[in-house]
Amino acid sequence: MLSKTFKPLLMLAALLFSGLALADAANVPEQAGNQAEVVWQALQQGAEGRTTSTAPFAKQAINSYDPALLEVRNNYLSYGIFAAFFGMIGAFIVFIAVNGISKLSDGFSGKLVYRWSKFDLFIHWLGAIPCLLLIITGLTLLAGKFLIEPFLGQAVFAQMGALAKPIHDYMAIPFMLGWLLMSVKWAKNQMPEKADIGWMLVVGGYINFGPFKGKHPHAGFANAGEKMWFWTFALGGAVISATGVILLFPDLVEPSRTLSLISLVIHGITAIVLTAFAVIHIFMATVMSEGGMECMVSGYCDENWAIQHHDLWYDEIKANGTLKYKGE
Image (cartoon, rainbow, N blue to C red; front, side, top):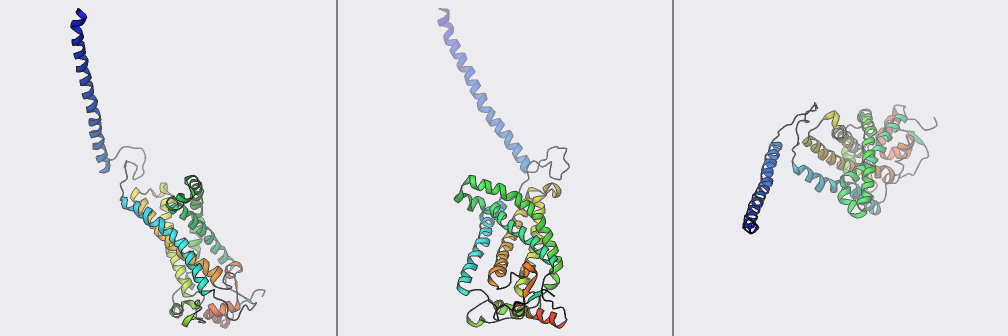
């Protein structure tokens, strides 16, 4: 009898307590959500915490940045570096197939003229080999996720990225040293002169058809094309080295998140320009100009190559008595 009397009361009490519990449970997420929103807004507005670090941005819990910077990197630079490398290679293959290479009109003389010192050769390869490795690894790091991973798969790309990152970091040091030495030592021979205009008007004499065929424009120690590459390399090397230091040594520079992303974007843009010019330079030296590669292998060039491509320089050293043949 008693149990029948209290049973409805117990059920009512249980319903009341469960309702109160559900109400409290519903309020908790709302309160937590509101509190989290307040904290998040404060962080976005630059609220700082406390830390023992003395770095300028250590107290800033979140480094705000413009999301557009990431879009530029992902949507434009990644494809740009890919196009600069493979696009220029493809363009040169087509050009050579249609135009052919620039041959020596009088063939090889068999006499080699002194052009570069051993130190010049050393600093050239000190910068050139790391530069090529930086281009290849940089292409992997910048464009790989969008243009390599979809074809080779995540596992293969992960291994490529893990290998590319340390190579890119370590090769930066010899590249910067080579860049600095070349820029300082070679600048005196890279100044613009009147003959550069004539060289540009006939595209250096490398066109083998139409009104350009058989043209051999005047040039000093360096022609206009080589000067364009030198100053692109010298100035671009300065930019890519400065931004590279910010990215490579964050503990030393202590950049903000925004500065890091800006450096990454500028680094990528400069890399695209240097990559395109580097491909042109490599093709011109190894394929396009007959006898050209010998210069940076032994430091000597064939006498007919000097006369055809750098006649003003050849006449100068012949006139002042500094003309030197290999073996003398």
